[in-house]
Amino acid sequence: MNGDSPTKKVRQTQAERSAQSDSQMFETAVRLIVDRGPSKTTLTDIGVLAGYSRGLAAYRYGTKDVFFKALIEHLNDLWVAELDRTVKPLRGIGRTAAAVTALQNFVRSHPDHLRAMYKLYYDSIDHHSETTQKLDELQTIQRTLAAQWLQEGLDSGQVVTDFTPEDYAEQYCSLVFGAIYQWLVNPEKIDLHKLLENCKRTLALMVPDASQPKANRNATTNND
Image (cartoon, rainbow, N blue to C red; front, side):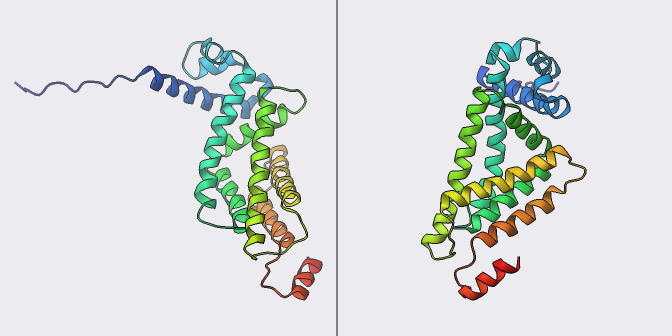
């Protein structure tokens, strides 16, 4: 007779069960938003298709808008993890190109997550909501980071430019968000990786290397 006692199954805590169900509902919501769009995605469908009760998402979050805000936070956490891995080892303006590279990596590893995140962003624009507030908060953070990267480059003498850090940050966001928007509209036609490579080139032209002679910097800018 085997004297070994059977392995006991470790019971999850309530917090762990809640985190697991949230994760499964978020992943289900991503698939639904990509397939149907935010407006046709319901809390009932999210709960049922995630393998839970039809009322779980509504019970936990109350409204779809609050759920979508939490989903955006979850998706943004995934994006920030990729951004930190790529950007943190660098300093100054090099972080800008690295941030675009991080986005290219994120598209490859989490294409549906990026689609869902930006579909939620654009769907929220025409009405004030929890989701709109979260979008504004995240865009403000992105502009602040881009401005800091340029300021680091200016302070170190790495680059020269007539752009203020704030103006540069706005142009950075315009290029990146515009590229993603075009890809969302027609992913079969738009090569997002190539488009983002061109964004890097444009951003580099805006802030020439300070070690390059001024005449050469001007010629490079005028030729492109």
